[in-house]
Length: 109
Ligand SMILES: CC(C)(COP(=O)(O)OP(=O)(O)OC[C@H]1O[C@@H](n2cnc3c(N)ncnc32)[C@H](O)[C@@H]1OP(=O)(O)O)[C@@H](O)C(=O)NCCC(=O)NCCS
Image (cartoon, rainbow, N blue to C red):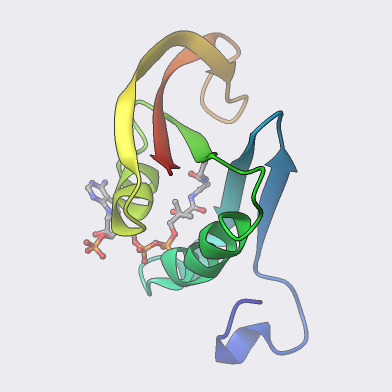
């Protein structure tokens, strides 16, 4: 739950937490008006911690566009490590119709 005064009665963002074979894949987005207050790292951290409470979860990870510096920073702030770049990995229609290079960030145990 995002804790911010304007989020009392309406959503300002979304976190997707998708189970994979032995891990959890995260996706996230926040309304622009709320960027830069540390909300997304604050919201993601307990989700990562909760995921690792599940004994079948060995890996929590996320992908972000290679030019999305804010997203990369969010993932660093929650102690995820950059594992490398995946070429032409994902399409971000708001940026381009072509599949884009993405970084993969992860925490493992
Ligand atoms: C990515 C996103 C969730 C960030 O959430 P947030 O709550 O604003 O995150 P933070 O407040 O921690 O700020 C982001 C960090 O990135 C940094 N940052 C932002 N823009 C940056 C830029 N262009 N270059 C370098 N660093 C940048 C900020 O300085 C901050 O780091 P700091 O706390 O060390 O100063 C938000 O920007 C967003 O929803 N973007 C659009 C959707 C998206 O990119 N989703 C992720 C897809 S993987």
